[in-house]
Image (cartoon, rainbow over all chains, first blue to last red; front, side, top):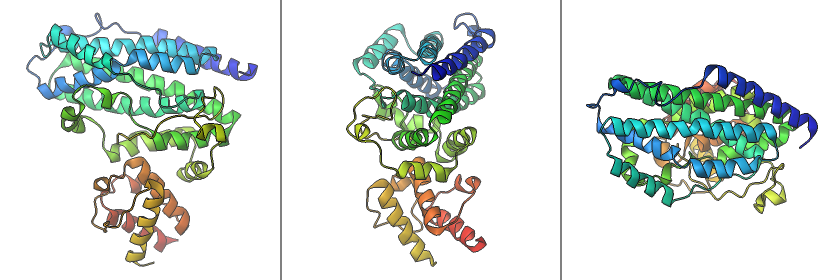
Length: 285
Length: 81
């Protein structure tokens, strides 16, 4: 990595990390009002929590794949390490909720974990830039989903779960902002290439892990009401991302029309190129 | 441009974007029922805008349910341009 770019990434990471240390650290055991779990809340609320917990539990795959893609960039690699720490609390807090609410037993949770770990999440893209762009979209969509769940927990008068989703959502948007900042740096370096990658990542985007979660088909109907529809996705995810990055829809469209380099089509991983070996992916929204 | 022509254009662009035929599509078809997700929809809208030399404001695109809804927005923009 070029010195100038490496220094920018380092600077962006230290800015992110200092803010996280000062303003965003939380403890799943001390900062959740566990005495305010509503044990009478609906099974649907618990099923959503279990499903999101399952998605969060693919953390070993997310970390293993994600950190190696950016291992040659101090700023980005250290961000991934910090990201992993923060994300690890998400599955932990949701697991504690499911147990303390009595919605799931210890045995059920272990069985669920075993089913989760039987499947492996594969990296959808293979270059640092594509994975950063993927991170922007995925974190923003996850943030919106968790806000919706937070409101639902509030409606069902479960203060503990409301607090969990509040803290998780705050982490997700912070991660999204870091990725967006990195994308702005990458656009300064190579706007055309970054836009081409963004068009590609949008075209192939799907939410991580969801279809790997056990009994996914059975969860779909409940998850539909828990997820975000087309209108919300456009209003809260797609348009805000383009606006933040200063990109128009037409710019993105034209960037997506350009042929991708040969090594990309062949799927060879390229650490600092535009490469992608992602299989055709079904989208979630 | 007539409504039928716009539907034909939508079918053509949707086929280019989604690599599928949409022969049964009508104005009343619900976009999500056609298996067109929000990101494909943005590509379709963008291609139509470029072909028709119009620009639809983002806020007009968020509440579209049927093909007819989109075509009505397109027609309004064409009248203004």
